[in-house]
Length: 123
Image (cartoon, rainbow, N blue to C red; front, side, top):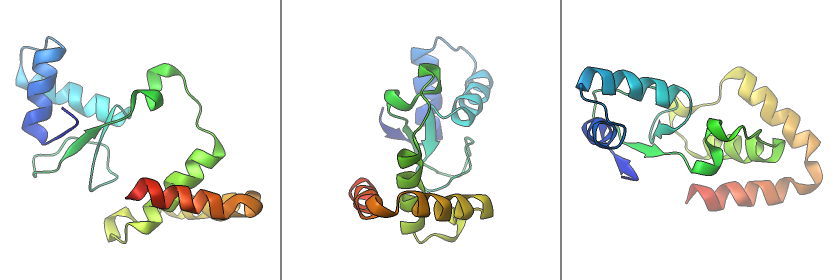
């Protein structure tokens, strides 16, 4: 499963993680989402909801269990992608907007490259 709804996610966890109870699978789903193993496609709130939201598994490279520290350029690309989505619920929080401005100053010489990378990933 690369993309699916809540029921698909719970079914996947019950099958692949040897979880026998749906309530336990839902709880595990909340924990896995909060830790970044999968995320809702249309929302930035990392929780499993019962509203028809679709979820996507995070690329294994970015799994927290890999102890990977994101670089500033990766965070800049992520924030740029968020600004491109034009959805009210995906607007940047104040601290994110401040970080974006700080990163834009820091990477002023290669900001065009970062923005182009964000555009390519957003498609």
